[in-house]
Length: 133
Image 1 (cartoon, one colour):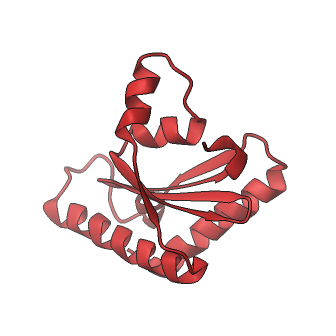
Image 2: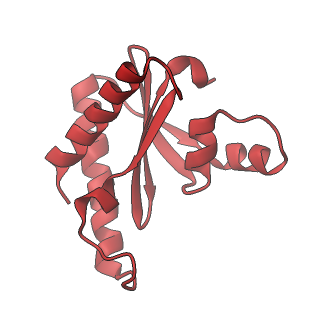
């Protein structure tokens, strides 16, 4: 998996959010799928899961260095539970919690950025900070 491509994808999500003028307020991408390394019809191989885990660790380290602030690990399970009960959950948290148990997050300017290891997916989300409690 390509760290440079993943960093560029996160920045593209931020730019897309700025260009959208706040509508819908967040954007999400599966960075592993964008790498095109795996045919979704093929069985998941243990090596692929290892690659996603390593790519997540590398991306979290690179973003922590870039934003000069440590990532905050967010437990997504309560958001999934609230969503299942029909309670209001911020859209980015509702989507991420449907795929992963936790996400690494940063607040950068008016952006909330999240990276989630949702094997076989590596998810990136960028949202307006006013959407996230």
